[in-house]
Length: 404
Image 1 (cartoon, rainbow, N blue to C red):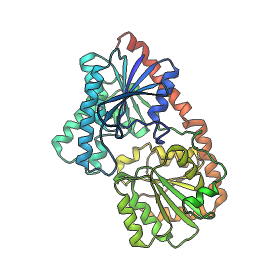
Image 2: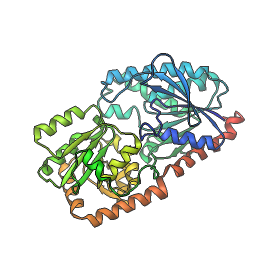
Image 3: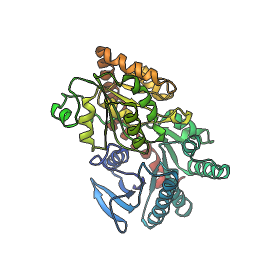
Image 4: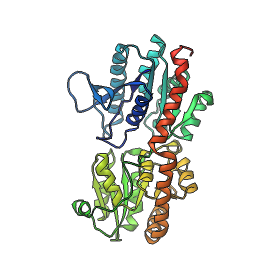
């Protein structure tokens, strides 16, 4: 089949670690499909451009988006991509299937229009339950707008030939919209065991980053947005700021980063290091230097449905994962003994957990081995991309015979 894949933030492993759509596309190519990726590139100027990345035809559209944008600026970015991608999608020829992956929810609009006007089926991938996330975070308050967006969400699910959710909670949220459970699959984010793995620590890199060699290193990597509960981490660090044998590494960026740096200065926290984004290979080396990984979110019920990429990369790296979401990630780290859950309303519990893991290296090491084993046997991209491809393959007879 010829597949049009719509992902506003598509990236390859050469740029960032969030490359789910890239790896899925590679598996679809191996199964004999062709893939055209429709995405936004903030670095290119002028008109939309086409290129080939490892067999994937990529259509780049100009646009702007970053984690520091205001809510209004993000909405404008979403709407611009929605309209531009719809125009370009309608120009594509002989498309058999569209795959649209959120966020944002507006990515579903061009897929819905192609279904309505050209009778092209689409699969919709739910990475976050919109609009419930912005509603609970306070970014969407107008009751009429909420009703409109909820109607749009349900329309996308209803018209999709299949829906793929990234967590059990997301799958439950889709089904609650009166969508048949048989129409929904759960395929979570992916570990990348060939990108993140445990090996000897790079001492030269430790010096280059300004770290101390024999400290217990705690890493947080990824987005530092409002949803990520970053102040919770700083609150937990304050009681540990005088402990010279513990260092904290923040890797990434986001709207809260300037605020976090300011708090560290005001609180006199000297054992925290802020770094920007790194490509996959460099990030893997830095995470390998660390002893445990933090995966935190704000204390909102909807955020407990998350499927964070940093969790699965941490599993691959063989790092115990400390989570604070009382959802399926809590069940995961407890069932497989690959980390700890801490109360999102009690930062002191995170402080105590960090101390405990530092003081019990054998237990910490065992959790790390369990994490790696789980990545290898359940969540590696080779396993989950195949599951995704099998879903597409099961739909192929209906699609090619127009029986939908």
